[in-house]
Image 1 (cartoon, rainbow, N blue to C red):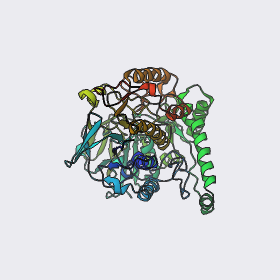
Image 2: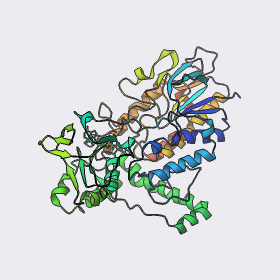
Image 3: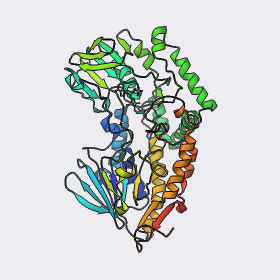
Image 4: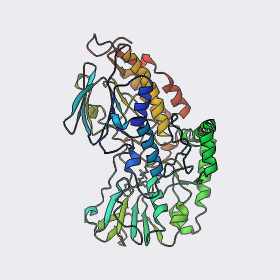
Length: 491
Ligand code: NA7
């Protein structure tokens, strides 16, 4: 058995889980690299008013760290961040983390990765786990005149809490989950709120029920009760959402559409209702969940602006009909560049292959985790995984369990493990074929779709994902003993 030295990039949800699961499996030499000053990833970065996770809290928790104290079915973002922070602190993640140091390059040679950071640190590792998140790099809209706005303008993931909100004229660009949550939180505080809608969204009604102290105590007193709650939520989430969207003709999908249609009918003003009505199927774009949005947008001080934005001016947003929407604050709830993954880190794999070249057209990874030519590198929540329709915590945990089985192969003496080109290609062919049955291809534009219009997502059921992740099929891998030239030939 050899000792492995592991680098984990990112101290967010998946990075924290990596440290814990690796240690459990006996891998103690783990260093985490975090470019920011603290743990928590997306929950540290996204602090906008109204932020919550639309996966129920008892499901959006680590399986190994249940939390009896969630306050709501869908708890707010600061509570979620505090949860990750406390798990990380209890498990000693902070002590293993180099904060405020950004990884800039990874170079592979002879079974080891040389990792370099912006501060000039350099070291070698046997294994690299990229826990760099998915919806991480803000998508800034290319709107003429954006820099000329005299008020405060910022992306939803870069909320400026110094900017006063109360009694101000607020503009929100976008109608995704972020914009919908922000609208719900700000409409009562703003003098006026303009929601700039390029595309209307179907809104799934959800009831964010609080847990009272008696329920929290019951969970504290009986961990089995909490486990059952998590399992039940997981099953319901899979049956009624995660698996439904991968089968556009399923009864569960029809039920989602019906719920969204009925929800839209609650909008009293027929003109507003039609403005808000999408012309594509529910869940074709990432489904937005909210029990508040329609109430918020019907408030007398709220407007939905459907005219295209022509430009941003010092005083506000000018739409193509010539109207100037005067604003004090402009929120860009315009989403994320979902095709970045661990980039801009420069990654040079075996035989000088560059990840940027391999991904020149679009990112891909075998089983959403590993890439041919990049041995001993694992991308948690990597390309084409179940990204928008499942708990990313479950995905990361399952991928870690799978990764650890491959690390055992290295621990037993192999120098390198990587997927074969044939396996990765066969996976991709099957994946593309399976996307044809999903709701994501039924006629809408969304961040699920790649440059070809093919969903960059896991097109099968979550149960299938669990099956695939149970045990690596070693016939899909090249396992190099180290005695050869590194191209691998032993599996
Ligand atoms: P999303 O879901 O990607 O939404 C981004 C929104 O911003 C969407 O309504 C876009 O309109 C709109 N957008 C983007 N660029 C522009 C420009 N240039 N002009 C006007 N409108 C624009 O991001 P969120 O942050 O809300 O949610 C991200 C995920 O977090 C979410 O899916 C959940 O998984 C959790 P479009 O629809 O493209 O016409």
